[in-house]
Amino acid sequence: MTYERREPDQAPAEQRSGLSPTVIALAIVAIVAVIFIVQNSSRTDVNFLFFNVRSRVWVALLVAIGIGVLLDRLLIAWWRRRRTRSDA
Image 1 (cartoon, rainbow, N blue to C red):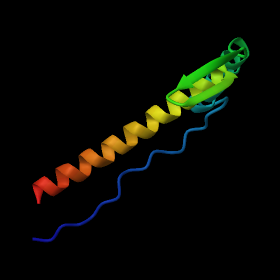
Image 2 (spheres, rainbow, N blue to C red):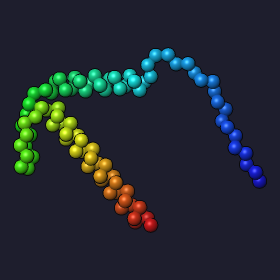
Image 3 (cartoon, helix red, strand yellow):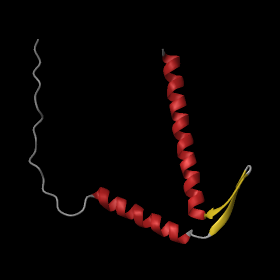
Image 4 (cartoon, one colour):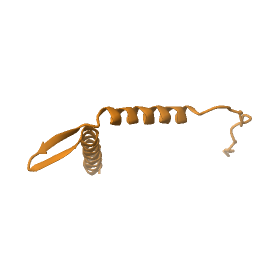
């Protein structure tokens, strides 16, 4: 039995005008980020263990989010490695 590979029918390229939804979403996120930074520009003390830092609120939140994302990535990598070792 022989199978032939057929190319899918290609519809003619549609002409789009205006901005793509991705560009619009990116612009909205950028505007919200600027508003967040402007509204949280006051300084605050951040204390953690033996670290004492005075920084802007938005910087402290950005660092906290970054650390959270890093911990999430590390946990996912550990979980996948553990799962592949147990499957083998």
